Amino acid sequence: MRIDIITCLPGLLEGFFSQSIIKRAIDKKVVDIVIHDLREYGIGKNKQIDDYAFGGGAGMVMQIEPLANITHKLTAERSYDDIIYVTPDGARFDQKQANFLSLLHNIIIVCGHYKGVDERYRQYFVTREISVGDYVLSGGEIPAALITDAIIRLVPGSLNDETSALTDSFQDGLLAPPVFTRPADYEGLKVPEILLSGDLKKIEEWRLEQSLKRTRERRPDLLDNSL
Image (cartoon, rainbow, N blue to C red; front, side, top):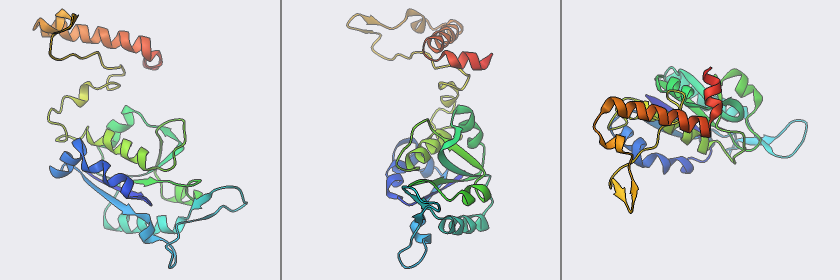
């Protein structure tokens, strides 16, 4: 899988992708992540990428030309399954979307800034718009990193145990059950006996019960959505 990320602040992403699971996935060639500095495609000697909004108002707008130029370059080199723009007014990102995106081969993620990008770029280039929540950040780099992380851990070969991702919260529409590790007894705080029993069938039944209980208490909306 290849993920190209277009940003005007590449330094915000480089450190994130040099650690942990994503770095291992890159080293194992499970995924190729390429960060593109939008300013290299800026207009004029100052490499301008933004300008004032037509009609006035506060804030700057990212120009269509630099974004179009780099997008044309990338799409001329390979075919992309999706060109994603991260924006507060996009569709809410969830596990279902992460699962779908993890099955694609090549995607582009565009990081917005300022007041956003020229609407014409969204209309004629972007194929999917994603929001990571009902709040506004200073740029699209954090959402891009979040989306990339959620996708990559689902790609076979990224995790040491590939079944781990399949038991995460939201995969079955429920929150994950509580988990425990050694010691079995910490100052009187004991691990549930069922987990020490070795009876796999009963353990799975317990975990399902706990998932339902936790979901009912903390995210009842998930149960409502599954009806």
